[in-house]
Length: 440
Image 1 (cartoon, rainbow, N blue to C red):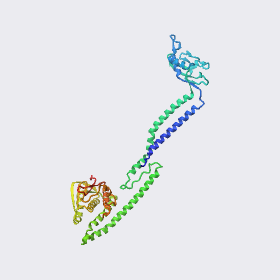
Image 2: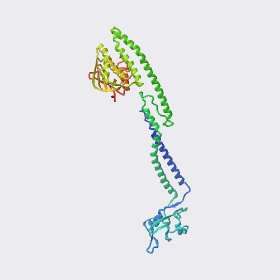
Image 3: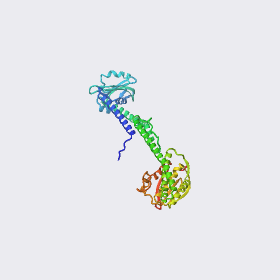
Image 4: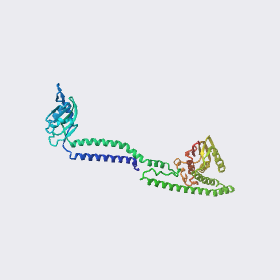
């Protein structure tokens, strides 16, 4: 079983998305590695200590600020025994907790001039690592310098860079998943249009060429090669068509002469060839009919009942002479559009084919836009119903037929957008049914 290739669109979309994600991942990894391995070392204080300190500063009954041991401050003191903070309130009063480093003590009166700061301690135990923040608590607004939990700068960078990388990655993923298929679909519009045009190519619709103006540059040589192949096929078809038409036209004259000589002969053996010559004449006319249909034969309104009666009248003398009968049964009458001559000869061919295969009682039944030819001969095996419509296929190897009759009938039916089918008659013979579209 041949393995099905994935679609070009799917491959373009998935590979483009994979490339984008890998590029973002590589850039994020490089950025993180750069900061982690940079010289920005030292320990930084957690800024949460500023709010813990603000919540622990209250005013007593006289309005003097004081520090109370809140649960948060108690937990901080347990985790960081050397925690400290100093605050400057809006009224200029100052208050501190723990041992404020002497290096920072002179800054406390001037905290109102600072909005925020991060101070990095370089040496253990890193008591100089502190934050300066504006905060609000029970005592009001204040500026606080505080030291609490400390962590290395690399941890901060790792956390921050991961958050940034995840946000960028997810944003790009959403944009790419939505935009990339749209971009690829737009880029492949020409390919889709060309594929739709290719579906319309068949033997009955020649002259179709695939569009080259919208396909990508890489696919253009393939489309051009297909168009050149279609040109060669059309030229070959035209040459074959002209040959068949010329051959059929040239056969008309000798067949007509032969028919005149047979009709004028008194020899019974020679006159028995009349049906065979009639069949040859019918085949040559059908070949010409196909040529005319390919080149736009005129469209007539056809009454199938009248057409069937004409065919029966033309063939009756030959059939009666050979001990056979033909009957036309008309049900509903309806007109169709098409080439009357080609359909007439197709029906004659069906009648002659029924006679040739043993039928001695032929019934032509007309019902609306369909016709049936029924015989009481040996019939056609079910497994041969499709094959007998192929060119040069003969039901019996030594049959006197050419193997073209039913195929030519099928081609005439196809040209008229009809349908031909074969069934078994109740009497054991064959029924060939043709259905045409009704006239509008």
